[in-house]
Image (tube, rainbow, N blue to C red; front, side, top):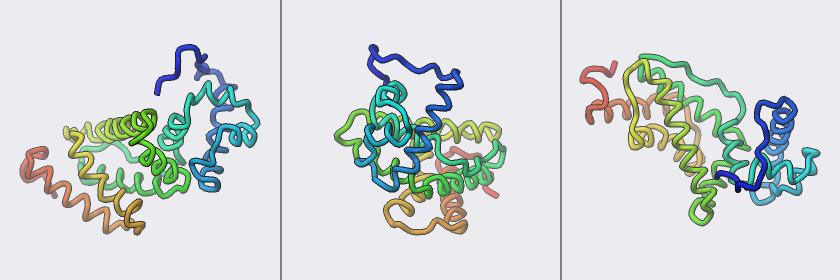
Amino acid sequence: MQPPLHRRRPTPDNPRVQRTRNRVLTVARALLPEVGPTGLTYALLAERADVTRQTLYRHWPNRAALLFDLILEGPDVGYPERGSDVRTVATAWLTSLRDGISDPATRSAVLAVAAQADHDPDSAQALVRIGQDRRAALNGLLEPSGVQLSESEYTLLYGPVLARLLLDRGQVTEEFIDTVVAQWLTTLERNGALPQGEIP
């Protein structure tokens, strides 16, 4: 998702650039649930955010890049703290994931990127980068515990929650999260990713 070399990259530490970027993301977040991913054109976004299309392309060379930022820079739903108790960190992280995906704009962006990934290389790359970013963030939270998750171990944790929210269209309750984490910890212990007897 790197922009072509001929595009000038905006300077991220410029306060004016940051204000413009934040305004555009705010407008995009409000528009996305209303018009859907295909309706979120750069022409409409430029008009509503009062910027030029060239400005949009400097920040996000394609729509996948915009959706990527909408997903990773979603609303503040509270983020877990680092900790040595794997169960506590995993539970807080899944709760944060549930709350973030429950935001209509984030949900629309996730579904759009996933749907486009089969035929759009930018969306496929965005999907991979989102997974890498989120796994790295969770591993950062788990560092004090000494546990670091492989890609498969990470998928086993978040998969049931995304399936319930996006496929089943059901509720993810605290009890559901507790069940997912308990089963996940048992699997980690059985596979040797947790020391025996580590599950409280």
